[in-house]
Length: 251
Image 1: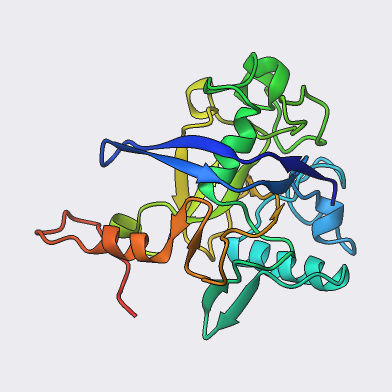
Image 2: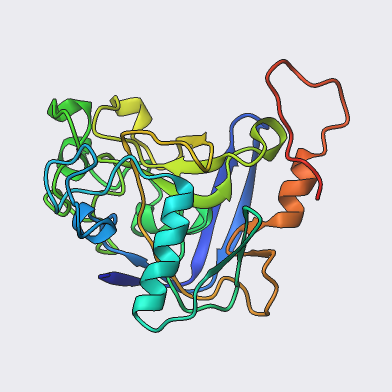
C-alpha cells in the first residue's frame, strides 16, 4: 500500500446528537493515499463488487472484512498484525506496526489535509459525488489531492473507521466517513458521520488503511482519540431509552 506520513497534531471532533465537541492530540501516523482498490482487496476477482474496474475502490465491504484484510496484508508484508479476534470480539494491538483502520480522529485530521474547512476544495474537483452523475465507484486518484497528498477522502465510497458511531444508541455499529458516489453535497463533508453494523454489506462502502502505534504504552483499549472505556461510559445511559436505542452491552 502507498501510505502517506501524517504529522502529529490536534483535531476537534463534534458529536451532533450529544451537542458536544472534544479536542484530540494525535501521534504521527501513516495512512493510505487512496482507498483500498478492488484489485488489492480481492486480486482473484477484482470486479465482484459494484466496481468500475480494478483501480476503483473495493465496495460492498463489511467492517469485519476490512479488519481481516488488514491482518492478511500485515502478515503478507511481515508486519505485526494489529488485530486479534476471540469469539467474534475484535481487539486492537496499540503498538503493532501492521495495517489497521484509522480512528475517527485520524481520518478527520488526515482528510482535512492541514485545513479547517469541511472540504479541502471545491467538491466537483476533489470527490466523486451526485454532482458527477456516476452510477458506481470510480478509479481512485483522478480528482485533486488534499494538502497531505490523500485522494478520494470525500466521495467515491464511504470509508470504515475503527470507532463505534454511537455506543449508547447503536451498540457495536462502526463509524463511516466521507460520503459516496451518489451522495448530495451536504453529505460529503469531513464532519458528516454515519454508521452501520460490522457485518453489514452496503454497496457504497469501502475503506482505507492506517499504520502506526496508537498509544505510547501497550494498552489495547485506547489511543488516537478512541477509548474502550469511553465507549462503555457513553453507553451507560441512566434513563428511559427511546424506541430503537440499543446500548452496547457490558462484558
